[in-house]
Amino acid sequence: MNPNDKYVFQALDSYPHSLEETIESLDYALSYDENNTMALCLYGRLYSEQLQKYEEAKVYFQKALTTDIHTLEVYPYYLETLLFNEDYDEAAQLITFALTIKGINTIEIKLKEVLLYEMTNDFEQALALAKRLKLYVFNTEWNSIIDDTKRRIKTKIKIINGDSSSEKSSNSTEKEAE
Image (cartoon, rainbow, N blue to C red; front, side, top):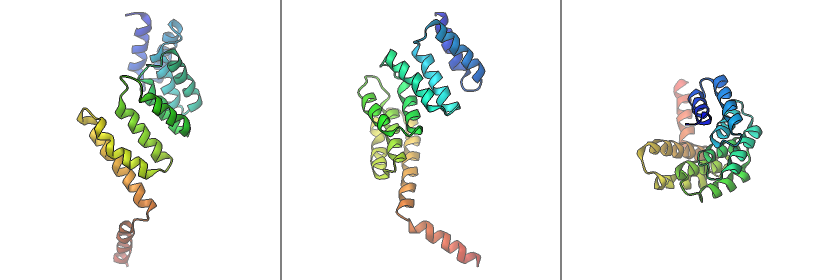
């Protein structure tokens, strides 16, 4: 194991509970190899998840993908950053591209696609895709995430459609209080 790998592992081990140690290890790793895709990805995550500095995070993710377009671990985090930064067109393009990469975790990318539709208020499309997500699952640990996603979207659709059952229950509660 080279020293660079050691520092990347230390950074991964420290993140997110010790940000100071994470940054120190990442700086060492990048001083050995400024194009280390794992270190660049983790720096991007740090800027996105901890500091909500999405533009800075995008720079790190882009550099990692420029260095190696097959850096599979970058795509889910980069997509999440694009979505939270409301770069929806860019996210849609990256989703389309990511799904062409051999070895990509399709379920993670498809979940980001559902989130894209949900964040752009296309709830019907989000629900239609969410219902098909189990086709991309090869172990059961994703099932609860998929089920929660479908429930969340269905709730939003009910809100948009003015679900009368929720209004009836609140009206009956008010009448009972009188």
